Amino acid sequence: MNASNHTYRPEPLRMTNQRKGILEEVQKARQHLTADEVYELVRKKQPRISLSTVYRNLEKMADAGILARLELSGNQRRYDWNTDMHHHARCVRCGAVRDVPVDAGVELDLGSQAINGFAVSGFRLEFKGICEKCR
Amino acid sequence: MNASNHTYRPEPLRMTNQRKGILEEVQKARQHLTADEVYELVRKKQPRISLSTVYRNLEKMADAGILARLELSGNQRRYDWNTDMHHHARCVRCGAVRDVPVDAGVELDLGSQAINGFAVSGFRLEFKGICEKCR
DNA sequence: AATAATAATAGTAATTATTCCTAAAAGTCA
DNA sequence: TGACTTTTAGGAATAATTACTATTATTATT
Image 1 (cartoon, rainbow over the protein chains, first blue to last red):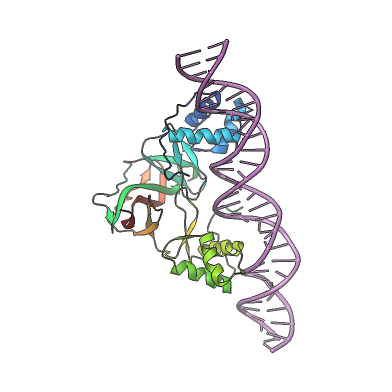
Image 2 (cartoon, each protein chain N blue to C red):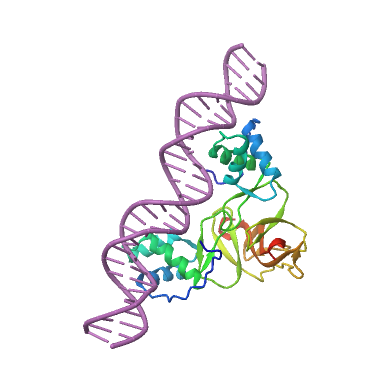
């Protein structure tokens, strides 16, 4: 058991077909996918791939910084091709999740942010609302 | 399957011993508890209570607005006696979660918040950092 | 207090998401 | 090519949560 989610991992990543296929699907997806969504997609091209391979690789690539983990509150883990800092907005009707650039009119004053002895080092911001399609 | 998490529930809540005991523990806890933490606590006084009763009641009381669900990203669901609007801060060392009042120096500009066609109706904000004890 | 109606319970089974295990196969490097 | 090490498939294991069901408890009403 490891305290940190982002353990330093010196071992090299071999470029296997499976890994390539998984990465491809995540990168070309328009939404943020769950492990089993990725599995279903990759399976069309590599019918013998196993679910555990998909899980393992998504986690490994997230550790390596190639992908980003997306753990929205109360939901299944998803993976995001966009590893830059950004927020997310979830539609309460259809459940779609979209990216929100950090500067999209959102201003979070973290200036001298020391909430009663708590030293803030980061935050995550999650919007909910109704997306364009659902209005 | 129901689209909404907060279904209108006209049926009355009967005040059973189990429900009373569960509510008591959540309200007197200093931390935000998971279902099985509540279970272990209530069990000391009501050794025959079942885990599913704890789960069912926590959910029911959350639906009724007596408790608040707390689903921090990538974590087990917890329950919060404080149903007023507030944020949370999680210590990356010890994992403790504390409340952050909405006005604690945090300013989120939601003025004309329409992120490219997405109508924002709410948001959740989660801090991480190091708590007083762990510094 | 007794009755009738129905909500809640204990105990367990089922589900879902994820991680772990292992022998066999496949990349990588010299 | 051969040696070394990572990765794989497939399935078992785990953890959190939800669903099921016969029995019991609560509440409102006589």
